[in-house]
Image 1 (cartoon, rainbow, N blue to C red):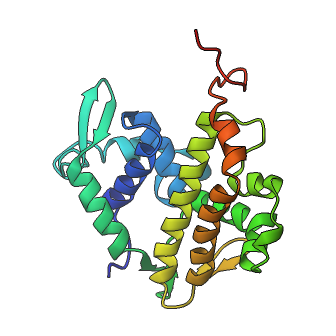
Image 2: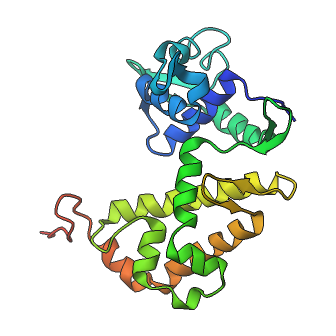
Amino acid sequence: MKAKLTIAEKLLLAALNVREESKTFSAEDLVVRAWELYPDSFGLAGYADQYPDSNRVLTNIMGSKGMRGKGWLRKVGQKQYRVTSKALSDGAELMQQDAVIADESGSLRAELDRKTSTELDRLVDTRAAKKILDRVDGTISFADACGFWDITVRSNANTLRVRLHEVSTLLERALLLAEASDGRGLKLSQHSVTASDLDQLIQGHQWLQERFAAELGVIRQRDDERLGRPTKRK
């Protein structure tokens, strides 16, 4: 097990994170995402919590030791990139191997980036999550489920699709880290969760989609993002 992720490895994970939103992304997209995930590594000196250091990222894209040199990025346009199959393979292995790393004091902790930790804190604090964990999920309303997914009854089909995918990815990644923590679970800003908690939430996430299939079906028909209602077909 590695003691610490390297700069290149952090950029690889950041690139894979960006890819979840768009298969093609810009160098600037990678700069911002790397900073959001690892502000201590990619923040501007003296202002790490406020601004990214673009040079730190850009210099690690190019060169034999950079992301392109490692075969992780493929240039497809002016400052436009896509991750390669090698990046996908190496990234999956990296997440398995480095789910738990040593911090500066030498103690082990689960590596959960700031954005993921904040979103997981939000999800665990919802009424639906609390009821799932307390095993009183039969009292969950559709409004509770919307809070769990961070949507509203007026959301459109694209928003629903993205949020369901994001919640699945969030919970599955958190479960992987929790399972690698030797029973310690994950310590968030407001909550602590165990692998068992996360497994319950994953099952609850699926159960809610089945229970409220009719309500979600209405949202899936609302495919006009500007108007928030079904598009008229000619």
